[in-house]
Image (cartoon, rainbow, N blue to C red; front, top):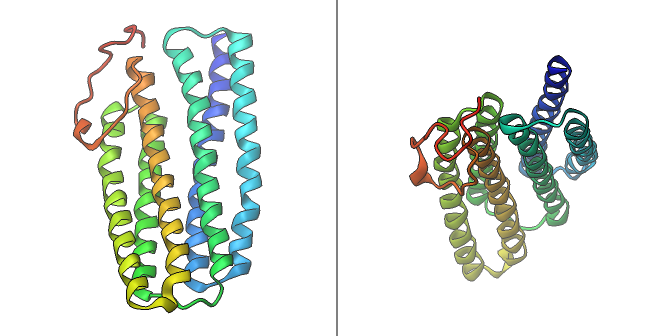
Length: 234
């Protein structure tokens, strides 16, 4: 019975890892399309979202079957529940990448500012790092690593604010940039939300390890607390 449970859990872990890889590839592809102003490449990113949606459904149904047939308790139950949440956040991350790709299709040949475009590319790179770090912590059940994820997200948040201010100033100085700037404010917001969901996944790691529901911030870094507040089960 335990072997069957472990096999099912491994399959779900693999599906979640694949969702993370696909979501990251989508954001990377969207930003490549953005840099090249390639509407065809952007459409490929939009189409890729269907695969992530299918994986999401597979994980949701798989977890329900696991709970119904195996009736896990203690930490095993927390792991199963966390997979439902993690897969939801990954599905949303893919949606945000898809939204960036759709923005590429909307801006077309609008006048753009190369410096801001480069900053958005850098911001997306940091957002992908947030997602990778969160998923690694999730796979390893590493609470200390999970508590470090918000530090990475802080950089994304700071860049989002800086880009917003730059775009407002650009549009005020040159009205021809206004349509593009308005779209780019949305793009920065989508990238910022992608990273936020990475932090949400990190919070699931703390839940699995400790049994406590938390909202992580950068002040929590390095404060792994073992199983304090949990049920003490391995």
